[in-house]
Image (tube, rainbow, N blue to C red; front, top):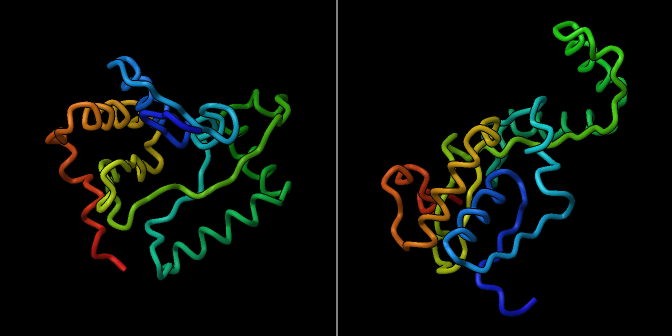
Length: 171
């Protein structure tokens, strides 16, 4: 691939929002997604297993989360347990067939805050992540703010706490 002005990797709600906002400002944007747009976490975010940090030395919660994701990923009985719980609240779900299942980790940062901005040491690399269980609700605005930052070169003031540079010394 050559001649790409802006390449966005990840077609979830935040990536798609960033791409759209940049395109509406006249940028040539290429959006790469391994599957269908918003078909992974953004498309199935109703159920989740979460973690409060990952990092280089996973804590117990992270270790348990990763293991649980692997267990549920391959355990149809676990999926049926979750489905039964959902059907207690929404009884019509007992008659609806399961068409697809998905399991994965929630993208929490080490401090629990989103990570939105320029990656330290990389003039052309940007990130929007760490929205965790709020990605679908917060992703569109996170994408818009990142697009504004990329387009103008000036970080919106409300992104100060989301600066990826806060992790530059974390090892």
